Length: 424
Image (cartoon, rainbow, N blue to C red; front, side):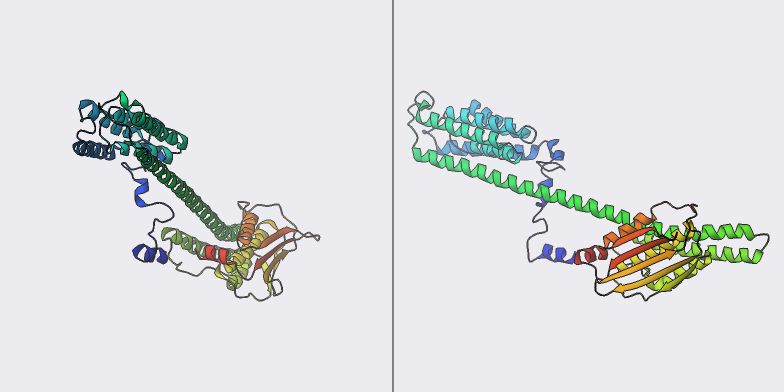
């Protein structure tokens, strides 16, 4: 972002370089001259200015060609206005405008009127046709004009005004042909550049949509993991409290205390996620949880009646990998609380230096209860998404002895591309 600001102020190409200049999408209306929005706009201003210029330029040309060409009369001015006025439709009907301006110019020259900016209307009409993708039509229109000019200047001049006219020099035809080729070449260049800008604009829009989708998935995973664990603890403790409310009030009080602590933590983490949404780009107010908070998970699991044994030391990980590892363990323990009849779970943390990977294994002795504590069923999918985002894997399934195992393998070093995404 800072680089863009520096390049926009000084050294280096302007900010729009590579995806179109600012005026490209404005034109005479809000939409660009060759965009779907611009098709509904009428280019009044440019057409009126061009018409005034063509009339004034033709008058000046007539004064310079007195005795050589016919004087401008009402018919000549009508032809000039018609040729320029057709450009109002150049965004809607570029092919008709290209042939219409070429025909008006050919009639104008056939009537013996002075050479002048009449060719400008043809140039703009054919330019619009090429940029709109009608290349063959534009080439045919300028070819028709050039062929008509050759016929008029070297054969039909005997029967057309002005009287006493002589054939034009062939060198003049070469100049006219060079101008025609130059006009079409410039139009082709603009068309190719416009297509490139459109592709880049579509790629940027697709990338923005992809980033938005990834962010939505990340937020959904985060909220799921935050709420699923805490709500499971609250659900279990609420059941304990209700069962013991009359027979053992002190134990019921302990369950209510656990519910209060779990709900407070869940509210804090949800608030942190929502604060990130409200202030995009700002650093979070609290550090993201990591494996250093495993003791807190063990304590919360104990409040839900689950004894957790932790083996191994957590290595230093990047923030994204550390958060993913914490959430995977949290979700695995939540699933034990929800779905397992075992009240004992084991968490093992191993570092494989040879493979450069962190291995997280969560086991319980089962059996599965088949009960549902209100989960969404997206826990395993969320774990797999977190692992895949870092280039890791998740294996989850029942063991031969009736228990259940979750095995996560995460790389210790995040690839540069994943690191950039994580920093965003």
